[in-house]
Length: 123
Image 1 (cartoon, rainbow, N blue to C red):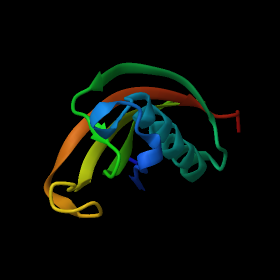
Image 2 (image 1 turned 45 degrees about the vertical axis):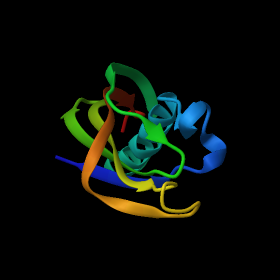
Image 3 (image 1 turned 180 degrees about the horizontal axis):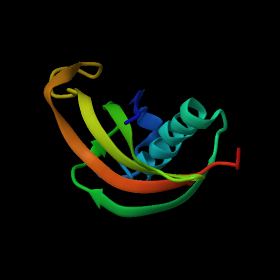
């Protein structure tokens, strides 16, 4: 089983809603980035995203968060790969302490999960 992990800081310029919330599609873009690395690792090609299924928005993501995006390959076809994704909040800004305060969370918060299918060129 192949697993790839990325971490990303969410800049305040990406907040779209009150309370510095970031739209759920932000995680889907990150899933695409980590899926690209999966394809490069396994196939030496960036591949193409074919579909998402079972996308679940479970908790809010906010500007100032540190996100951990994990992609785990669950099925390898001839040209397609099925990947389970999880986006976790592992760090969060603490504006209640000061403008620039932040902390890493003891227990990550699962924000978004999904399953996706990518395809790669024939060998």
